[in-house]
Amino acid sequence: TSGSKGRTKPSVKMTFEDIGGQDSAKKELVEALDFLIKHEEIKKFGIRPLKGILLTGPPGTGKTLLAKASASYTNSVFMSAAGSEFVEMYVGVGASRIRDLFKEARTRAEKEKKDSAIIFIDEIDVIGGKRDGGQQREYDQTLNQLLTEMDGMHTSTSPRILIMAATNRKEMLDSALLRPGRFDRHIQVDLPDKKGRLHILNIHAKNKPLAENISLDKIAQEAYNFSGAQLESLMNEAAIYAMRDNQTTIEQRHMSLAVDKVLMGEKTDRESTR
Ligand code: ATP
Image (tube, rainbow, N blue to C red; front, side, top):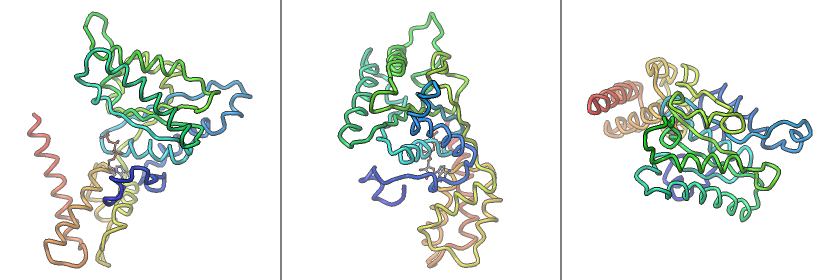
C-alpha cells in the first residue's frame, strides 16, 4: 500500500499485480484459491475442501501482501492477526481471541454479503511451535483452539473460511498443524531473483520521479539477495537522497547510495542483536 491513504483505508485493494516477482508462489496460490471459488465443483468430485495454506520464507518477501491479494482475488473478507499478539496473555485469553477472530470473520462476511473469509495469521510459529510434552506451554490452549476451529470449519456452510498463515521457520511447527485437512498446502515465498527484483523496483518507483537515463536493471543487479521489503526501502532512501541533494529527479548515484544504506542498516541491525 502506498501513501497515507493506506493507513486510514485498510480496504485499499491489494492485487497480485501489485506484487513483484514471486511468479511460482502466485501461480500455486491461484490454483489453490480456485478450490475456494469452485467449491460446488470440488464437492462433486468428492475433493476435501481446502482449509489452510501455509506461506513459508524469509521476512519481507511479500507473504502478507500475498494473503491480502488472495482476499481480493476470491472476493473474501480479510482479517489478520500475528502470533506475537498472543504473547503474554493470561491463560485462556489467547484461545478466546482465536474464537473471536473466527466469529468476527463470520459476522463481517454476513454484513458485507461475501460468501468467504480469509483469516491471515502471521508468525504462526509463535503459537504453533512444537509441543514437546513435559514443558508447560502457555500457548497450548491458543493452538488447540485454532485446531478446533479449523476442524469445525464446514466449507459447505457460508461463509467458507480459509486460514492463511506465514512463518520463516516451518521446521519449528507442531506436526498437528501440518496434518491433512489443516495446513496441508505449503507455498514457498523466496527472495526474488534479478527479474523479480526489477519488477519490485518498478512497482515502488511508480510514484517517484526518476531521471530519464536511470537503469533500474543495474540496481536490480546490485541489490543481490535483497528482499521485497528492502527494495521498497531502497527506493524510498534513493528519493530521500535526491531530495536532500536538491534535485528534481532521482539519479543513478542516489540509487547506488541507497543500496549501500540499506545494506549498512541491515548490518548494524544484525550486530546490535548479537
Ligand atoms: P514478514 O515475514 O516480515 O511478515 P512478509 O513476507 O509478510 O514479511 P510483507 O509484509 O508482505 O512481507 O512485505 C513488507 C513490505 O515490503 C510490503 O509492504 C511491500 O512494500 C514490500 N514488499 C515485499 N515483497 C514485495 C513484493 N514481492 N512486491 C512488492 N513489494 C514487496
